[in-house]
Image (cartoon, rainbow, N blue to C red):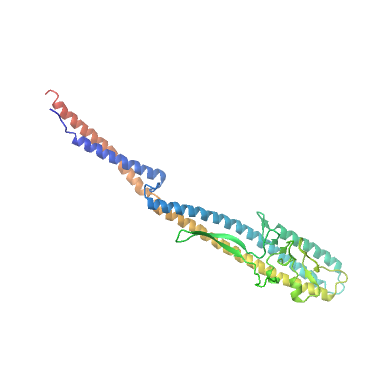
Length: 332
């Protein structure tokens, strides 16, 4: 005679196997912090989270670029602000030279030192090799300076990087004016210094000055016919008047440049704040899709551990019952 009364044992084993499987899954959730760790856990959520993570890394790169741009703009603005103070001092020296009996040569010595300081301030305004106040042959004055501002993913899956721009106004005719002097110094070999507020002679020509006065010469540009602002014993009242007019016009343009830098620096700060908020939103959104609820998982883990203990006890009881029945038939 055969005995097949193992129903209680099989049931206990089945329950224990289910409990162990659920316990393993819950332990993985608790240890990784994720309820969707692999594509097999939830293919749709995993795909979305993976895409958003890559976008979030791109957004992090944008924040780094904005940080670099903010530092560059801060240096440029500081240089312009310092240069305005220096040019204002030069203007006051020229006004003082209109007085009778003043030593124009001594005043010119001071002006010469101030112009040297202008050159030093302009060339020192570089951050990580990028100088926004000195134009060289490496730059194209007809193209705006651009800063990466945002990583954008379209509804069709296409991506692009938007930019913040520091514009250089170019007339449609291609003829430059004093308003195009959006740099402090234009040292390009192919120009005449026309894009630098300190090196352009447009202020003099537009004011109708007798000479093509500039605050300083372009290092590499064609400076033929230009005259640096400066005094000597033969400087007439009309000469000084023209130099004061040119200096004042340069100050106004430099103030415009400084204002543009300040406005762009503010936009960079605002965009950086937005990028940080966007990173937080990305992280939060990913978390809603794939993160495990640690409170729930911890509670489930404790419950499953208890179930496992009870399952083991149930299996022991079932085995004990089965052994008792088999003993009854041992003497048969």
